Amino acid sequence: MSGASRRDFLKEAAFAPLLFAGSRGGTRTGRREGGGPSSDLPSYVALHKSGELGLRARALKELYRNCSLCPRDCRVDRTRGQLGKCRGSATVKISNAFAHFGEESPLVGTRGSGTIFFSNCGLRCLYCQNADISLEGHGREIPDERLAAVMLGLQGIGCHNINLVTPTHYLPGIVAALDLAAAGGLSIPLVYNTGGYEKAEIIRRLDGIVDIYMPDFKYWDPAEAARYSAEAFNYPHYAREAHREMHRQVGALRVDDNGLATRGLLIRHLVLPGRVAGTRDVFQFIARELSRDSYVNVMRQYRPEHEAPRYPAINRRITAAEFAEAMGWAREAGLRRFAR
Ligand code: SF4
Figure 1 (cartoon, helix red, strand yellow):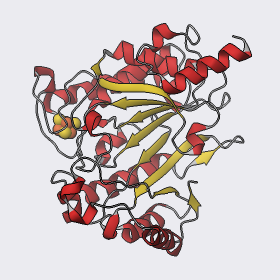
Figure 2 (tube, protein in one colour):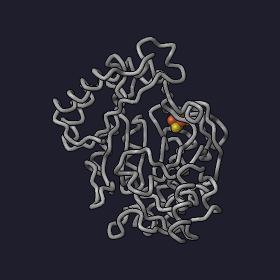
Figure 3 (cartoon, protein in one colour):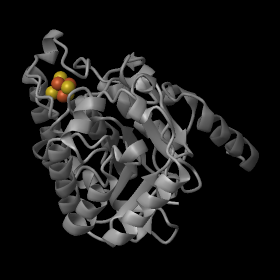
């Protein structure tokens, strides 16, 4: 592909849906053109070659029959059409997939993060800025083979990683698709981009599969979690356990010579108005129980979306003073690596 036409193709891919990745171009096999480190393949590649990845996918699929994939523990049989709190069926549903240039710089690099947005969500924050996707479930159901083609398509256009946004309720299909994609040559790091409401026992099943965990740590106070995220009073407990397990597997974020993330934990914390998120305690936990070298994105972009205007405490943006206070707490805790 010539320089000009390649630029046009990448530009188009940055803005256009990639649901038809398999037929829109890119390399025929989707094999990597420089995305990610060539000498340090993601460990899911070895798991695929040994057959372990396929075994794990099949074991995970069994969980759909009595779903306990996330802390909601609905125990519904999704293979028979029963729906739990997340409203997801046993077929993966995605809303969009494209080269994303708005994520953290170690993921974006020069060619973007290959982001796949999954429909529906088990956490259901009432202020969600993607409510049409996560709460209303907009999107399209696709078979595992199609999802594998989307992954390869993202690699084919040069993305540096596969960034799975809100993946847990479709984890069995995603791992099955990853196995197929690895057979087709997928070899860029896998990013697990989650709201942090995770069971450690499910995260343990991803040991050796996920290269980069990117969880939110949303709340410290169970009452605030329950108030704003559909009665998820147990969020802080599960988030702490999940962060510990993610850190055990991959450690603090590591980047290569080009500043691209290769492996590790990248934690996001959205500062909410009026200290609702428990920011100080969250940072103390990260520094004390994970690592002071944890890579943290302290996010200031909260806006009162969706149902938030009905809740006075969160019906405003944060002030500059609140963000400065949050950064002060991060430094007070001993944290020193922040996303810019
Ligand atoms: S993934 Fe969905 S159905 Fe399964 S436990 Fe979580 S919310 Fe319930």
